[in-house]
Image (tube, rainbow over all chains, first blue to last red; front, side, top):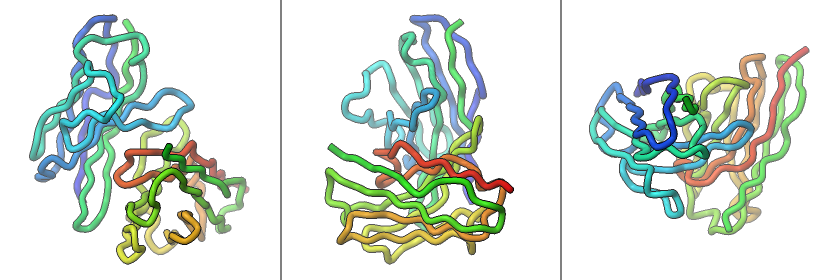
Length: 109
Length: 114
């Protein structure tokens, strides 16, 4: 099975900072990677699909990049409403499975 | 508007069974793969099971294989998760998701405890 290693596990940053989270896959997953945001008590929301595509309606300060085994999620200018836990997830269809990273808890410094 | 509404969660004793349901609306249900994802309190997300649009392809996480069964009724726009031989470690919020999680339900809580 494919394993996902996400780092850091937690992060404190100031409003306006650039924030970066990384995810490493244990084998080549091409671009089959999503990024999610989860606020306390809420269901997760998809932000980025296929490694770098922004879901419609998601602010442009969020972005994703990478392919193969190394992926990056970036918030270009942190806003107070971005306080949440962020997860990466690889998805594969042979066989269908979807492994999540451990999550990154982001808060305001 | 895409809507996914889970139901069927509750308190069950270890070794017991529950059947979760997910009512889908706002899209052509039969055209989409569906998944179940769970989250124990204070923990991360765990993918549980996948089913193709026709129901012909099904896959499970190793942690639930042999105990859980995913199914769907495309005529009723519904997704199901039959959970048998439940264990304390199955305690979690269970989410129904469309495709590879582009939409999520609000979740239903399963508590396995004596």
